[in-house]
Image (cartoon, rainbow, N blue to C red; front, side, top):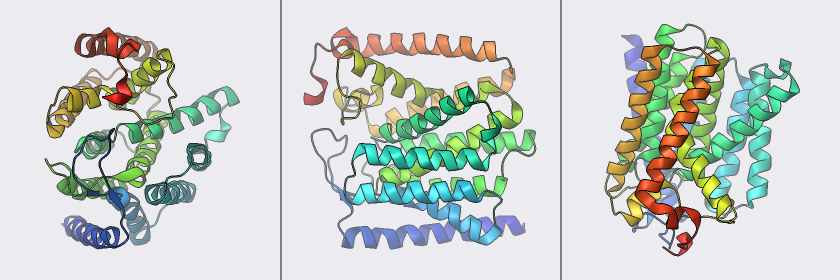
Length: 328
């Protein structure tokens, strides 16, 4: 019962912190104005996802932590991302700090003991996942809802697999997501996560996923973030085919097509992504596969299926470059 009261107080305090941030953001003009690439039409507070690192450090100050390098990496990547929300930074500068933060994370988890051929791809994959989360943060509800599903799945597994994560820390971040969802998962969002939100929550999820896979030695748990990975990876692939710069802003994700070109409500698109990922998570947990071969086969089947869906919905003209996407 004491834990319930602590979590309740934590939840209320996070709401207060969000109210304070709204006032600060409004005063200092930290807002998001719609443009040609936006999926929203109203001026909205940017950087509401600052509540995620706040929750992480609040948990640290209340309960302590045995992962100082992880917290240092989270602080670094959150500060840089928040600066980017206020005044846009060069993409190369952001990448440098993301690689530094990921290196700190891997140091915390003692992954430097692995061979270089494992460490380098893991470092690159971690940074790629962080950027994928950022790219996918384009419509109301999708970042908050998808991230909450991922954490809820990890919390469920914590009861089944001992020793890979702090339930208290994971619950604290989940509560922060609930606060953010209250203001964002609606027809007219009151705030957006901003880079500070999407990047910081991605960094936290990457840390938890690495810890989970390392502890259980089960690569199939990577499928818990499959849908985000598929949309991001296939979008990058098609942009390369169209000879576009993958670092330039765009509106060529599948979720953007559904929300913008097809006119589906943001919340509906977000729920489609969340529910499909939920079904995948249930399947992975229920089947309890541990084989790397099964993971590779599952990944290949998922990629083929997802690409097929994209061609069926968007058509070859859009995906292969006969329609100028950035002018939509």
